[in-house]
Length: 201
Image (cartoon, rainbow, N blue to C red; front, top):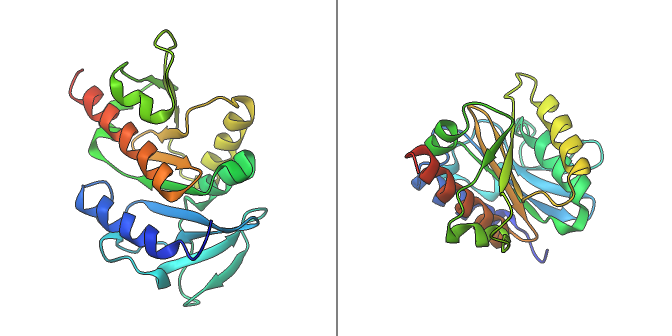
């Protein structure tokens, strides 16, 4: 990914905040800094006023902090989920976006997966076969977020053809892509589909 992605991620954060997907200090955003590391939003910061200085650069292999503007800035707890996705999917993933929307909470209250409605929007997730059931995994919202990261890694290794998104129950959606714009496309598509489900579609 060319250049510093933090400015673009900060813009995405403001968009998500304005759209009600990252209220308070919820959610986190990341993008590769290079093949071995990624930038992720710091913990406890509002995405409505996000700046490049509020990101932390982590090593993908072990989560070690490599760079930050302020020693007091801690990486988001959900960084373990992002790390799992970067590790398993490799260079096919350049960015991950995680938000906390009302629709995601309402649509994924039970079960271990969610069947998405077969409407035109699924094509934004790369789904073209109208005869195939389209599902997203739902993970339990463990108090120890690292456990969600472990489960994410296990699922992705076992399911190479999975859609580029997942849901954590009572929490929200994480979506990813080769670039920040592609990850945004996937996130928006999932949110659209979850909004339909949350309204009884």
